[in-house]
Structures are given as structure tokens and as C-alpha cells.
Image (cartoon, rainbow, N blue to C red; front, side, top):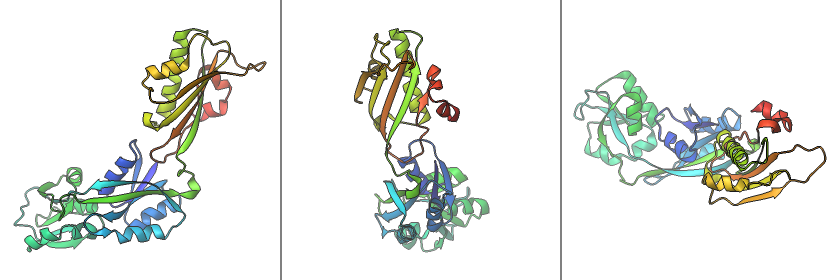
Length: 308
């Protein structure tokens, strides 16, 4: 999953991405809001996060304008990111020795009280909070500072001269995540098929095969348990010694509705076979590997096995 954001590494948008996508994604920094949205529209990114509102200054107009330019995009999630601005400078710098502090204009507007009480420090506009921190680190000028997050300080090796310099203590920004309507990533509900086999009708073999199958479905699709809506199991009529649902409950799937049934005994069909259909509702959009076929059931769907 490729997720674009406006800014540089260490920007608050990275926190928004981490809160919306709890699994690993490829983060793509882009200089402008319009560029981040355009990357999704043109297929260079699967999604992007855009700030649209801040508790201190209200609407983030540049974010809204970027989204309005591409009405074919669909909002698929949002999150509130706490904004705790820090004054960052190269090691050895002092508050009295600073002459400027740069950051994104939105961040500067959230720190007006700091500049009023420190008139010798002049605000300077930068394209991003993280970018401002990077530039200050690269120049190493002890008279220049940046306003960004503590995470940006750690990323670029800067020291924190002051923390929490924003005007409001509970300052936060609302980010939205958008995808292209053409990508189908806006769909949250999916059904994942899986199948496996055993050597004989033995409870331990059925339990082992069930654990392996469900584990592979979860791992390959980066699923979390609260994203699983329900699970439907079927077994061929030669399997009668154990319920696959019992193994799922033993795995901790106690809050998931589970159902077992018997397969139709069609002549020539595979024997000693266990199948499942897992219904999921994704918290955040992402492409799924979906179907998983293991052991002898690979012969049922060699196309799926080859992709895996």
C-alpha cells in the first residue's frame, strides 16, 4: 500500500498514516497538498492523507482546495492527530541566540503567542514541518530553528529547546484519507476463500490444518481480529471427527460468529478437504492477497497458488 502525504519525513502526517493504517505501508512524501492528491488521481499512490481542520485555526484551506480539484476521489477514513509543536535547533544552539524559526504556515499560525513573547525570533515559512527540521539540520546554523514534532527532532538529530509552544495545549489536526474511486480500494467489505486438506479423519490433523489455514489468511492479508466479521467452514463428508470452528475459538476467535457445514458429495470431488469463507471489513483500505489454498487443495486453484 503506497500512501502519499504532503511534506517531508517527520511530518505530522506520518502519525496520521500510522493511526489509520496499523500495518506497514510505503509512505511517499510529496512537496504540496495538490501533489499528494494528484499522485492518487494518477495512480502513483494508492491513497493519501490530507489535513483539513485544526483546532486552533479552523479549516486548512490548502487541504480542502487540493481535494476539491479531484472530485473523483473518495474519503475512506479520518483521524485526529495531537499536535505538540517543539522548537528544534542544532546541538549547541540557545534560545537567546536564535534569530529565526521556520515551519509550515499553518504551524506558524498555531504558535503566534510564542513569537509575541520571543520577538527576536522571526517566523519563516517552509513547505512543511518535517522539511523545516531537515533544512535546519542540514545547514547547522545555530541561529536558525524549526518548529516541528519531537519525532522530527529524533529523525534529524536536532535538540528540543522548548516543547509545547503551540497556543492551545490540546491542539490537534484532523486528517482525512482518500483513494481513487477507480481503484476499488474504497470497498471495506471483502470475502476471502481458503482451503486445505488432511491425510485422514483425525481431530489433531483437522485442528492443525485449520490453524495453518486461518493463520495464513490472516498473515497474507495483514488482518486484525476485529476486522473479521464471520467465518463459514465446510468439510467433505469423510471428515466427521472435529469441528474446525472449535480450533478457531481456541485460537482466540471467540467474538467471531463461526459456522460449520458439510460439502455437497459431488462425484470425483477432492476428499479429506476443509474449506472456509472469511468475511472481513477492513479498518483502512488496502489491497488483499485474498484467497489461500494449501496442501493438496493447491490443485483446486493452481492460479491462486502461483500468485502466492
